[in-house]
Every structure is written in structure tokens, then in C-alpha cells.
Image 1 (spheres, rainbow, N blue to C red):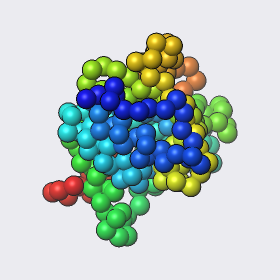
Image 2 (tube, helix red, strand yellow; image 1 turned 45 degrees about the vertical axis):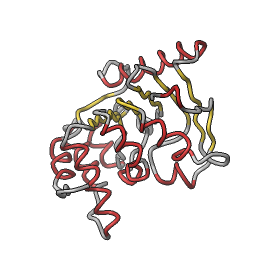
Image 3 (cartoon, rainbow, N blue to C red; image 1 turned 90 degrees about the vertical axis):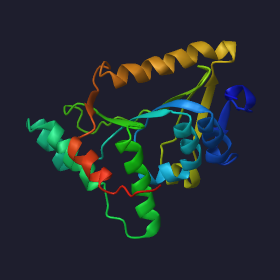
Image 4 (tube, one colour; image 1 turned 180 degrees about the vertical axis):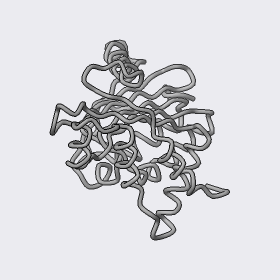
Length: 225
């Protein structure tokens, strides 16, 4: 059916809308490509979106995420001293993978492992250069395609985390390529994402997701999900 069958608002706020139920899930169920750049990313958010993402995967779809690592002061200092930034980024991402302590956490990691191992999800890592001592990559944009090449683009304060979905006061503004006055804004946001994905943005370093971290996540894969 595509996005033409959906009632898509021009903006959503967490104090007024259930953004997962009203925006993410119905749109992702009709999608074949999801491009998302966020300041932070949590595997728990994938479980929250799992119904919609499952629809995207059934459609033969793909997910492209750009995320920011949580660097410690020691990590930043090491990069500034010229140590291998790829190794430091890999260690920082590895620190954020916690061993599951219950069934729910096991399923979160299992879901993420299946998406990565099947190449349904690609992840890249973006961070600001070491001379910006306190800076970080903190952009939040998304572009989603349906099978008819209609696009929904959005930007705002929301990260892909449970806190952002349910606890924080967050908002997003939505642009729809089926609305004539929105097309240029959709084009602009997608151009920004594609430039970042290709590593063409100034003052931002973009790396492939570290192999060792990818292998660690895939190790949590079960036979079913």
C-alpha cells in the first residue's frame, strides 16, 4: 500500500503522541529502506521498533544507521596523542555491549545479531575530530522509503533509545515527498545523510563498524528471532 494509505502528521511530540505506535511502526511496516543518523543508539530501541522493522525486513528492506560512540576522556586524549582511532573506537563500542542478565536482554541482542548477520542492517560510526575536545556527533535525521519510492524524512531531538521514546520530552518534524512543498526539504535531509555515509562531510570522521564489535554482537545470535 505504501505511505499513501497512512495518516502522517507534520510533527510529533512525546507529550502528545506515542511516536513509536503512531509514526515509526506503521511507516516502517510499509518501508523498504530506512536511513537513520543519530547521536546515540541503543539495541533496546530495536525491540521497541521490532514490529515495524520486521515488516521492513519482510519487504526485503534494509537499514542504514550512523551512530556516535560514547568516548571517555581517556579515549579522546589517546586520539589526540595520535593513537589508532579505529582501535579506540572499537574499544569504546565494545564497552557498551553488556552481557544479558535476563531473557528480555537476550532477545534484544539476538534481534540485533540477526539483523547484522543477514546484512539487513549496516552500521557506521561518526565522531568529531580530536581537536574538538568536547564536541560530538549529535545530529538526528531519518529518511525512509516505501516500495513506490515515496520518502518520509524527519529531524528533531529524538534518538533511538527507550528513554527518548517514552521518558524524555522529544519532538520530530516530518517532511513527506508526496507533499509538493516538502520535496526540497526531503532532498536536503537525504543529501546530508548520503554525504555523511560516504564520509564526505567536513569535520566529521566516519568509520566502518569495527569487525571485532560486529563479531561480538553476532555471537549472541540464536536459531530463531
